[in-house]
Amino acid sequence: MGKEPNQITEPIAKLFEGKNFAFIATLMKDGWPQITPTWVDLEDGRILVNTAEGRLKQKNISRDDRIAISVADQNNPYHMVTIRGRVVEQTKEGAAEHIDKLAKKYLGVDKYPIRSPDEKRIILKIKPERVHYQPTQN
Amino acid sequence: MGKEPNQITEPIAKLFEGKNFAFIATLMKDGWPQITPTWVDLEDGRILVNTAEGRLKQKNISRDDRIAISVADQNNPYHMVTIRGRVVEQTKEGAAEHIDKLAKKYLGVDKYPIRSPDEKRIILKIKPERVHYQPTQN
Image 1 (cartoon, rainbow over the protein chains, first blue to last red):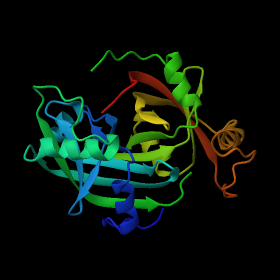
Image 2 (cartoon, chains in turn blue, red):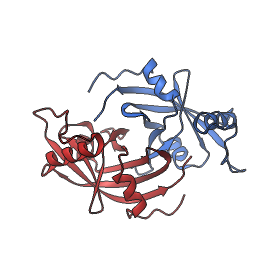
Image 3 (cartoon, rainbow over the protein chains, first blue to last red):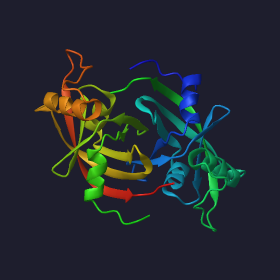
């Protein structure tokens, strides 16, 4: 185990800026961990995840804001970062534009293509507390 | 949300048999979720993860056996499975051979190359309880 600072350094930011998926772990009501793959974004030192109201992870983090998230380089999964943090903010403001931005990043399209008319998008803003960065992992 | 059976069906088995990384979530002492990327294997309906004694996830599951694990197709991360389950067995028997088998699968080498002399390998055997398989995920 190396040191566990709480800063998103440049090589870590690159992992988030790439087209790499993140895996986010949240807590079920009974404390059981849950995990979901997700698109991810970085803004002002916060990790941004875009979900919709009522989704499992949104319900989970509304009850318990503690999460863990891991991003691995799609071209080299041994190059990865694992972060524990808290969802410090949930906002609907700009969330529709933000999912389009992520669709552009991950799918190369201008509009998020699978949005249902009645869903309310929400941005989850995560403050990193423990950052474990490892260029190589076994 | 689709149905959540507890069976590892054929397309799910293929995800585990491929060179895809798994992400496993365990619980810290204070209940905080932790996540680590890991090699993974399937045997007799159990998910096998090979770790070493004293590693964070091994300590975590020894205290609380509840885990979540997700595997995405490296060629199409929208094709993925997420499973909640329990570590029903920990064994050192065959664990050294098993890490070599995983090294063969993931690295194409006969011997696990980064083993330290004093580490004790352990196979964690996970019984799936909730299986959520999704060929496409956003």
